[in-house]
Length: 468
Image (cartoon, rainbow, N blue to C red; front, side, top):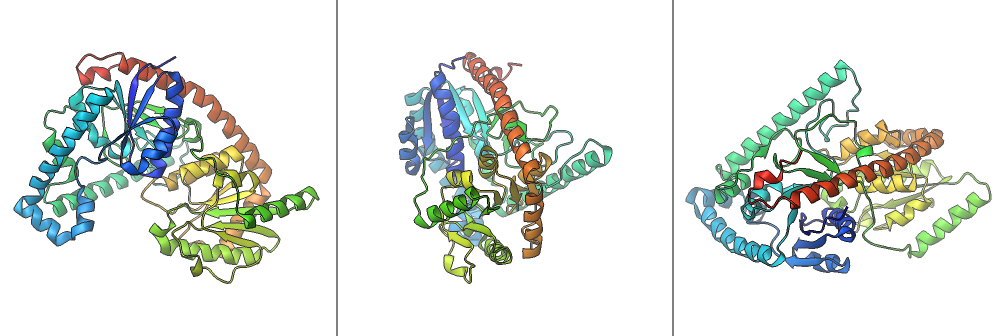
């Protein structure tokens, strides 16, 4: 089925979000979609190099409260709210940005907008154009579903009353936390939160807030495309929003392994394996943004160094991120090499075990390469704990607690994966096959959704979503 539509993709301005949307665009373009991206200047060349059109425009309709507080401090921020100068400034900025968006829509003439769910509240503004909108979620669906815990939880659900009760308690705990955070924001902004400001600036929008979700601000009327594979998720019953899983995974860059130290190590390990030696290679990475949680990362990296010393027969590769000071890590053994960055997708083809924080991209790449994982979730506020729970649920690896981990407990995790290596690899192969099968079904559903939405240019936005 060809979509034959002009599609405007509005991604959140972060590399992971951009890459996920590029993969979706690659799928839609050959099927008749004329793809436009919108966003900041610094992502223009990345998108244009993929062959897609790019419209340079501010990603945010006005400066968010969080950014203003970071730039000015709380006291000045509160004083500007009391005096009303902040809202006047937002109105002025919004008016100019709205004109920019008007020109973009008039130039691009999209039949459909794919809006990053990370700021789905922009739909309040987009709704004035009477163009159908689909939210694109680059993590697991954050929506409530019976028996499935919030994705910030490491709980692995089972089909019994105790698990269901515990899952419900986790949702209530999550909702209380979100409510308290909302109250805190209301107090700090004197009621002028980003959402309340946007709704006051877009009074004609009939869209409504989606409350039963564990992360972010969602719009109830928007169907959702999740860029996580359906086969990787827990089994779900119906959710209060139609969710389509786009599980296709591609690397947006084609890096090669060029570092001589790394090439020499891989050659050495392969030669030993060819000689029949039981040589193992373990790769550890907590992602590229380790400077955000530098203290936790530093402590864990040092535990990995000690673990490597305790296992001289195993080779270790430690990727620390380009912003982390390598001088903070010293006294490393000969069987551990430290790198700022590595071409992960290519490296995994040579790896036996990966120690990861549980980001969805790393998990997908491990599944593709059939590499068992040890997941140590680092970000408790997003989907890493839930990703780790799903790795354990599908028998793709094991999980641990990064905050309480010790060299001894890391060694035990490594031992448990080595003991069950064939079992884990069989599960990884099955998961790859399940993802391929579910992708074919879900991709067809996505094309049908787009075809139906773009075929209903009735001038009534709500009518666009009444397709089931």
